[in-house]
Amino acid sequence: MQPASTKRGHIEHPLNRRSSAGSIYQSQILPKPVPFVRSPIFLSGFSLPSNYLSVSQFSIINCQAIIPNILFRSMNSPDDNANPGGALPSTASVSSLGPVKMVQIAQFLPKDERDALFVSVCANQASFQRPGIPRSDAGGSLYLSLDSDECDRSGVGPVREATEFLSKRILGLLPTLFTALNIDPFAVSKIPLTLVNGLDGHNGIPHADSIDGRFKISLLYYFHRVPKAFRGGDLEFYDTDAASPKGHSDETSARIDHQDNLLIAFSSQSFHGVTEVQCDSDDFADGRFAAIGFLGPQ
Image (cartoon, rainbow, N blue to C red; front, side, top):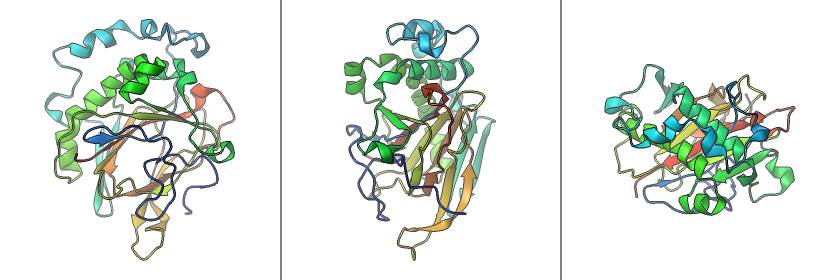
């Protein structure tokens, strides 16, 4: 099987202009450095509950009022919306990618939290930007960095609040993720995320996220409109091949379908890419959504 298409939209990893394997990336969209963690790019949509307004009726001003109040009230609740004891939920699976591990957790967020995230993202469509590459190369790729300063300036606080639930749940699982991925623990204070919306033409060229060993764990959270309005956008993994100038084999070793409400965690040294998205709609809510975060020692 051939690697993911590279003709358009390859913005999945904007951390550096060149990986250890020599692949060129865009650096213009890297969020500001944050202690312990950095983040880059991904994203998609999903159908709204029947009691919600259509996406076109949302505005940034009324977004927080639409999201169920229980979400905001529960931010400081005793259980903190965390997974008790940090144990992997019953929907989790652990698999091997050659010498490294990968964890998948289906239905990661409770429905109300997942709904709130989707609603917030769609209400803030205007805040998403194209990467710093020509439109013909970017394809249908849009991104939103959730760096705290940018959020304050751009008025996307509701999106940041909704993603707090995602970050908190991941933080609660970190001890178990370290063990499952065979990675030595390190301090993590928070998990800033970048959101990506991929419509027609979006794809990610094969790459590894571990730049000079800075990142140890790559995190992807997928969501999209249900039923899915696009084809493709699958996550593909490639075996490391030291004899190849690209650093990896041309054949895929694993493929993961873009599923709604799915968390994926894997070693940042793993080569991976995204197959090209095919979407007949140009509706923002019909795209392939992903939230991405990278974890590494300070």
